[in-house]
Length: 145
Image (cartoon, rainbow, N blue to C red; front, side, top):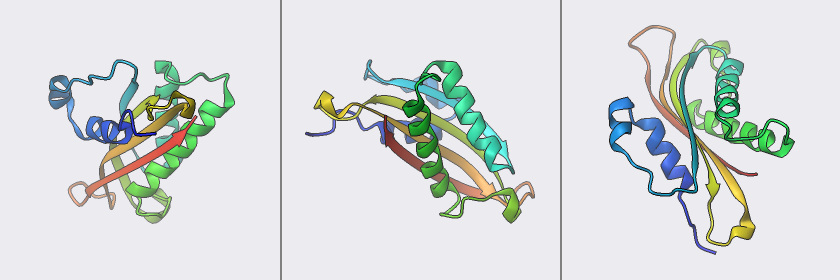
């Protein structure tokens, strides 16, 4: 039951690449779905909502299927724990984020009975709400659908 796709690695790579670098990147796996975007906020709910809205608008998950929304939500939270170093708070702690995100959906294992998975990756900056005092951060969350 080996890995078919490294959806986490693909999501992190996509989140880390800027628009010019992204154009040069080609995802060879045709059976993966991808959604990308950017978000900046001092409000955690706005970050979560931005990702959920982008993913739903792209058609990567079906809004009428609860388990897909549920899987996305948990993958987002897991990825945000990486960005926030395990303390799921930004504005409340006087810090802000500026993040690129990528969500990848696909079959992660060679055995198709394992089903589809979602990987959510964030890359960007976090820090005090003073321009220029941020530092890089990255987070990855993976959940089965």
